[in-house]
Length: 341
Length: 264
Picture 1 (cartoon, one colour):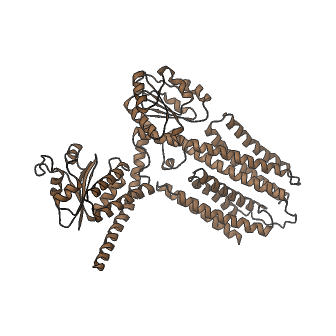
Picture 2 (cartoon, helix red, strand yellow):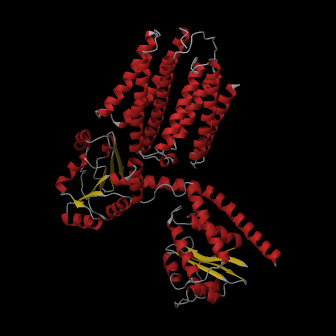
Picture 3 (tube, helix red, strand yellow):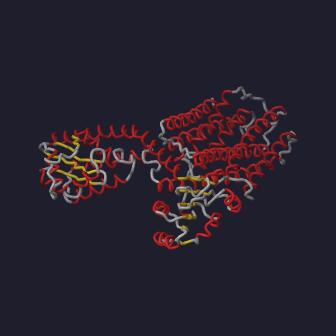
């Protein structure tokens, strides 16, 4: 039995190349056309990979032809940057992919769900047999172990996720937080959605253009605060997300300090993603106020990525153990079969 | 013989500390369960030590500085076992273990386990007063540890430099809620301890009484200032550390003067 993986990813091909090989085939069609005993197709925005088991040696070109079956591309004229892994290298590669080690953003968890979905699709079409079933079940187990036993998925790497994670580190449950969104730009909309997805219910939107504020408020189902009244909200809100086009700071220590006395001892978390900044940097010196501008958010994201990269070696060690163990268990299974025969 | 139990207990806390340090150095902090179990085992050894020593003495084993430190370490571990899981503060174990290790390590290394023949019969009010005060100190110790965790988390948030431990520390507001509850519990127990001291029938040294009331006033002032929101959470956390340091100094002084006056 040959176990192999043939594919291309963000490491080897640009998006224009990847999209030419995505969406043209299914696991079942590949298994049928290439003559594989089992096959599974994993397609994401960053990779197109075929995992297959066959009795005979199947060339990379044969798989490539299956992937472009419905298009006019000719692999002979256009040699794609495919990689090929066999046996233990293939197992190791899958474990790395499922654990997020091979992802563009190391440690991201979306790939885990995508791999599960690909497995379910292939299983439903009958393209997955006992070998790939065992391999993928083990891959899911490895991915979970890597996430539990390392900090590979810790930290945050986008503005929205940094804002959400920091807010959770300050307040715990976000469902009890009051949030004011000042300025209704695209980044602020994405961050607002991230906050809402984590349970924020008390959300107020304020914008110079009332119409745009209403649009954002309606899209997340929350209320609008007139722009002239936003400062007064600082007495009661927990999180201020600001991204206006103002040329001068809208919030200064002189404005905020008197209001802090009227607040209870809850902290105030300010996310200022505007350039030029909406909040005077010296506001951060006030007690109980945590101000993050776009540079500090980027710096936090960079620290998170560094932390994740430091965890790669630990994750690789876990994967190496599982690769050995997986082949041992396959060998034990084959021995049992031969003894039974 | 019972001293070996305390040594075994100290090794359990040492194991928790070493494990934490290794995990922190490797940037893979997963010490939570290990810490809880090694502190739990250490607590069992501590309890066995105090039980045997108490049986031997025929009274609560707080007759010299060695026993007082062992009892205090036991109180800290006891409060952690109650508070840690209840408030989902598993990381607190990583901070509790070094404190208990220090207390017990000092008790074992310093020549303070001086046994005196005690002829005076056990005074139940005095024992209640002393043990209740020591349990209150244990609660203040945990408030101090929560204060350290708060300041650590707060510092990282302010400076925007987030270490691996940042993701394992509880949220700021949760930590502050725990600090407040621990301060109230410690204060209530300490008040009971002080009031029961007036029923002992023994004339306690004046300096002890004055120092104990001064500590009570310090914690009362912290709580009052927190209640009236005069103090920011960060300052309350810092005062928890100062308060417990004062409590330790006072404990030393009380035990020292008690030994001078031969009060068990």
